[in-house]
Length: 339
Image (cartoon, rainbow, N blue to C red; front, side, top):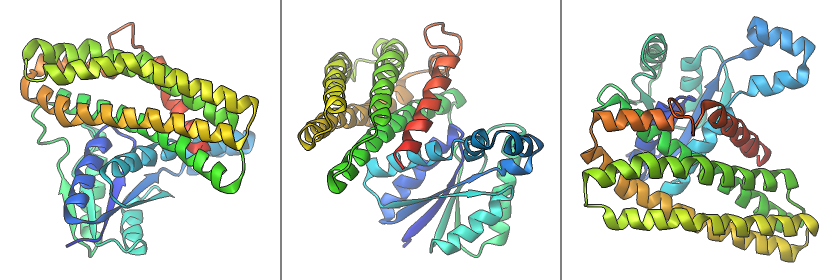
């Protein structure tokens, strides 16, 4: 039916839902996916022009924006689903033109787009891009209503954030594995900053932020509303407690390799990453296959509102927004370093 599907994505939470739908569709029809992120032309703004003149190094980082993080999360989704994929990043203030051009350049035979992005003015702008693509392309366009038909906006937002955090963790693991594989095949070494940064991210974000929120909000609410998932919840709670041992073993392997970057220690580090990755895939799969659907079936709007506030780092002193934004910046640096 289709062989290569173009999926334009932005940095919004709703992009997670769009990518999930697109990847599921691509897998169903046996197609590959080409993810496209069109970032704004920062150099064309007055702030960008000034920074380019005064701080060229900072300008490069600002101009790049979150592009690597956006495509890394989409690639993690495709990797978990087992479909072939490619990613393209372009700079333009006319996204619809880039979408039409890249679809032709990449040999795509379908464009999979969201009908709208966020609510308000931005939704009008994103919606207008979809309309313009429909008006200018000769390819078929599948328009996904990632927001309009959601039974609960809070449910949609919470599920998107949770899956987005899963994709971030998966992308960091992939960055580690990719760097190690390159070092093994080329006889080179892995950047110590990448190794230590990845361990810090996994340790602080997964153990200190993501899993505590799941325990305190998602799992607790489901357990109070239904007994259907008690066995799966018990397994997930157990895995949460056991994860620290996997990360400690990974941290020790990183430290050993940093002290002596031999092929033997690189191999041991690779084994430690593989063991942790296997446990992480199993854990995320259980949550997304069983727990999230059960929560969608049993939790009410008030439950989802509370969960959304927690996962979006609002209204809870244990999970402040500054901390979450700090992890986002670290995640971007890590996936950028691995490319």
